[in-house]
Image (cartoon, rainbow, N blue to C red; front, side, top):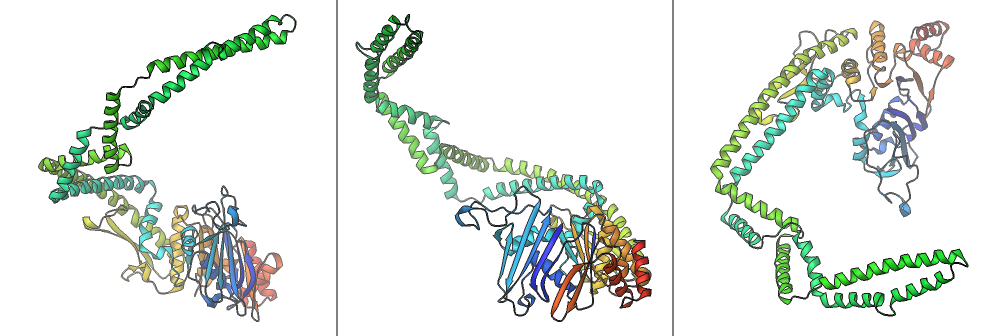
Length: 559
């Protein structure tokens, strides 16, 4: 959702901003005042290609800034990215906040820079972060609904639980069928393995099995070998430590002598008795250490034959690590891979038959899931088309209707989304042959079809913000009121921004901006109260007369 957009040096706008409401926001003004420049600003924030024509004459660059809430998760800056010394980039927002700030700058040479939350970003990141939440509905715009790939998801969203279960079952069955086919292909390809690959697998298996390494053996042997190779030094060090502790005049004797001396005068000063007790406790610790040193010394044995055997075994394991490592786990995995490959070749016929059986069962389950999914969609599609066509009728579109076309595809064309191709078709009059929605030529017609479809989709539509331009082209009278009513209803589930010339639409807005031009300067200002009444009056009659002002007040009172 758009919280605010600021514009500097864009076309005729030197400095301007809008803060759309969460409901319906309208932009009005005389033709040529620069209302569509704001749409250009929004497109820049959505990742559209930059043009030098957008930079205001005489200026070096333009800047468009937008604050959004609820955008899809965007990549956060790593430490030091886009900042000197690893500090946070200026203007960066709280990573735990739902707010995202996007800035796009275009210089007079056409070079463009983008920032997301204070860090440098590629333009395609704007398309990924901002564009999915906004749908531009206007003449010749690249709208989400004009892309056939989005139509199926819209049908499923509108159908809700009626399709969600069958689709989940189909997706599971599709994944299982893909896995079964991949395993069958792997087995079939094993027959084509060269003799060199099979010989290599046999060599690997034989070499590793000859050594037969055990899990954890290498690390244990590495530790034991270090002790065995340094047995003499270890024994000497432990003996010296034990002697220093427990021999005559060793640490224990001196410690006990100190404790005895203090105990002799403890009756005079209690604190010395406590000190003596501490020394006695320390003596117990030293005695325990001396005992452990003695036990360690007794365990050390130098066996040249055993050392040679350990060294030989360690060398064998190191050879396997050099060939198939670097970890012993890698060696064991390589052994399992070679054994599995050879087993596959040796039992090829049985493995192939089993894989075919699994594949056939998976395909049967997928076909059943596909039929169930298509049945659910076939039931939902006409209902969606009928509701959209009814709204189009309210907009008095001359008998125009929407048709939902679901066509089963050959098995090789099935995707994870389903077995059939789905597309919205449009018939401009009752008897006309429906054609793909993407081929509609009239800008106003496109916008009204989009409006009807969006109104029916309601909360099921994943897009947060809808921007309509040309939606009121050639509209007046009762159609204008119907159009205003549909936009107002749509604003209950979406943020809606409309560029309009219709007073009937303008009076339904929660927020009203007027775009005006004086010479080569365009200004944007919100209007309320009497200023809004004058603008609505101008839209009704071209000027604010007593009659048009009275009509404007009447329309505003009815909203």
